[in-house]
Image (cartoon, rainbow, N blue to C red; front, side, top):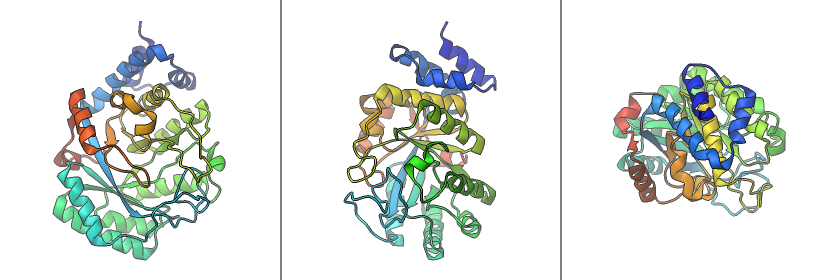
Amino acid sequence: MNKWMDLADKVLEGRGISNEEALSILDCPDDDVLLLMHASFKIRKRYYGKKVKLNMIMNAKSGLCPENCGYCSQSSISSAPVNTYRMVDKDTLLAGAKRAYDLNVGTYCIVASGRGPSNKEVDHVVEAVKEIKDTYGLKVCACLGILKPEQASRLKEAGVDRYNHNINTSANNHANITTSHTYDDRVNTVEMVKESGMSPCSGVIVGMRETRQDVVDMANSLKAIDADSIPINYLHAIDGTPLEGVKELNPLYCLKVLALFRFINPTKEIRISGGREVNLRSLQPMGLYAANSVFVGDYLTTAGQEETDDYKMLRDLGFEVETVDEMNSSLV
């Protein structure tokens, strides 16, 4: 018998997996990874069929961040050379939305560096989002940092569908990654997003010297938070950051992580995100047997692969891109 398929059946019956079972996924023998991904796909297919959601990032404000996150080239303690600029103008935000629309990307993500937005920055995003929704009908996700309740309400009223604020790592590992804000600061922002009526998006970065138990704790924390969308980032260590030179990951382990998150969060959007190109490498297509969503194009300060390669990958897998209209029919 395939124990992974038995575990998938357990999940599909509505029963959660134990901590021991979760750890066993991360410790799956490499020779059994195909069986594990087959079981993951059984869960993924139940809730998402063969559809893939596409997301695209607009780096709307770069660098100039006072936080000390150890993975980030934009942080106050990073010496990495990055472009720094204040919030881009509305025309630039609209041009990014048009590019997303032309590429049949369903979710357009407006991302800004910093601890949190000023009210003036929120005003700027609100104005742009209203025009983006009217012109292109895209689902809009904002990622602007720690919000105040009235800012969350304004974004919701303007038409922002989803707000991203990653927990990034486990509560246990958080202080090893940053001390300029707390783990609870991040969780509280996600809870505020939920209260505003926006769909909560929160994910992780794997490969930051965390333990296997930390990874399981991350997946369970996001289940408890009830995040609708879960981006799985893999550390792309950047020279000039405290995590420079850290390379703990290999492609097969990255697949196991995606499987774990699918088993623990079976109904949620699991998105393969930053670092997939350098960590999953040639196994990127296999990741979509667990995940049902992917970023296309570039990330914040690192390059992604060509969009044409992503579309070829999806066609070769026999998967279908979820259209903008289909995306608009569901908040998840």
